[in-house]
Length: 154
Image (cartoon, rainbow, N blue to C red; front, side, top):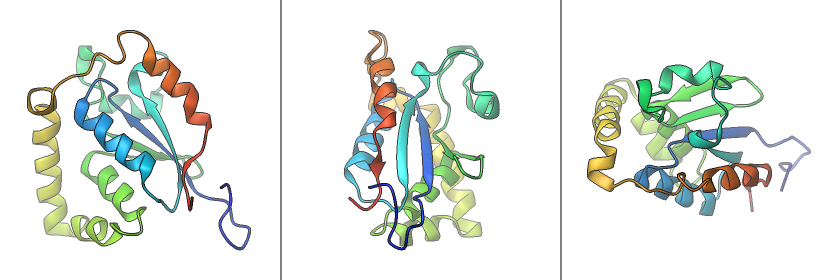
């Protein structure tokens, strides 16, 4: 579905994630199956040509070239949100979890969620494992699927 009731267009959010991180892949799979208020597009970092992420390059893990945090770009506003703030944004976009996103964005809890997020992100491969899904070019195939709308009120 490409429009909300009343003729307004859905907000488009592009989610950049580490396509080799099993935790990230699980989270994206869950988002794909969830009802959201926005149209979500999913792009594994490994499918993005080098140098084309100018506005999100600060989220890269040095030479490893992996995302150190999930990024969400609001396509209409051009604003990029990363890490725990991006997770809270996505939670607020899910009608049944919006309360959790608002709670996690409160000042004291925001600091706590950011600290926990950084810790989990740093050790994500050790804690959850690493997928070799991108080594065979499959992330490029997934990226082509991003043109299909996901989310919205379907």
